Length: 495
Image (cartoon, rainbow, N blue to C red; front, side, top):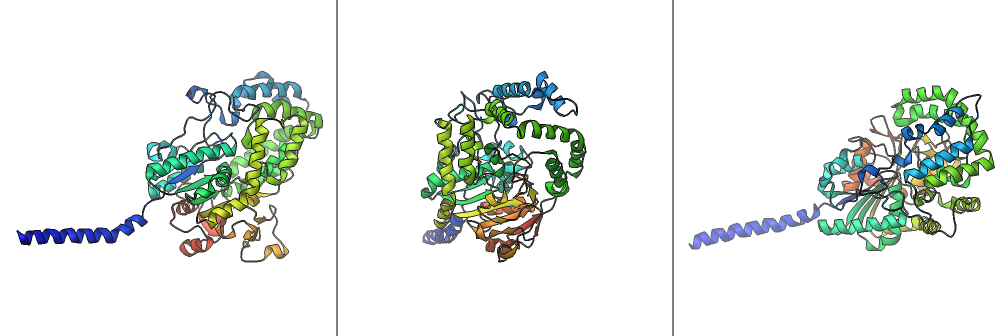
């Protein structure tokens, strides 16, 4: 009996020793839950979020419904016909009525109307919402899917928010989800992965909650926290003509995913040389360059459509905010005494503190990775049409201050020298807020990441901590430089 007791005791001791020696490894391998944030348009909107039959068309643009309106159809046909001039007053009135009826706009104080909003706020993981991972073959669902392949969908959460609302309001919702995920997973920290407008949400989150120190890493992909130059249109910085648009379409033949849709863009360009060109020239002459008609267009069409949506104002670059809002207030488009103005003014101040905030979270121990794409000319609607962008977000803003050459140009002089300069002489990362934590990818259009590509795997590996979020660590592990070029399949080569 004594021998049996000794043997049992010995087995127990061995088990205890093995468990104790292994427990640090178990603790080290504990997975940090990941929360992903989509961008503009990333969640479906409803007039009544409790009723799926009230879905609002993406950005309120239902081409079929618009074409069924005889006035809109007739005047649009005139727009693209050589010898006919549209009745702009009738066209603007009908477009305004159409947009008003979509229910996409907020009220004058920048708040949703009635039960307008999203119906997909979840506090459980994507293991309970696997359809999300395959709902699109691009954007944040594809990134979430790649991350789930590594750490399991049970450790990945999606913050689906009403992308129209004020960033500071959205940041409060993100805080609620962060706390819920920590409680559910018994984790002390989370990782936040944000794309596009999601980056602006993160800027507001950092501003209010950075002292909580419960975010292990931030991975920010083509983020819009510093705005976009297209939003200069709010200040009537409009440059819109057929030559620029046709030139842009020809540029897109190769710029769009390495020529993936070359045939499509050539077909559009062929049409554009005739019909589209006629329509654009008319719009430019009759509306854009006509102060009275331009104001009428903004007041009769744009205001009923998106005039009370905070998010669009909050995409105005920080340096342009005062001039843009002054123009809109003078026009009568924006009410300085409204709750809407108070919201966007508040976020404007958040923008001004962003560089300080992101440096503070890094200093406090959080890892930060910033992905800024380039290689595409900006949309040809403002004076900044020659900016380097990823099609939508200006590279200089996404990288938080990178020095970026105009599209088709190279940096010169002192700007073209130093270890942070790309070999193609387009980017100097030394002026970024975090130069050692910022990567530039050439040739990927905004948000169109492909599953299982080098680009998507790179983002996923940063997100789950397979590699430290700094240029030196990435180069050592993957041989990737700070400047990368993606082919059609989004596989990488160093620039």
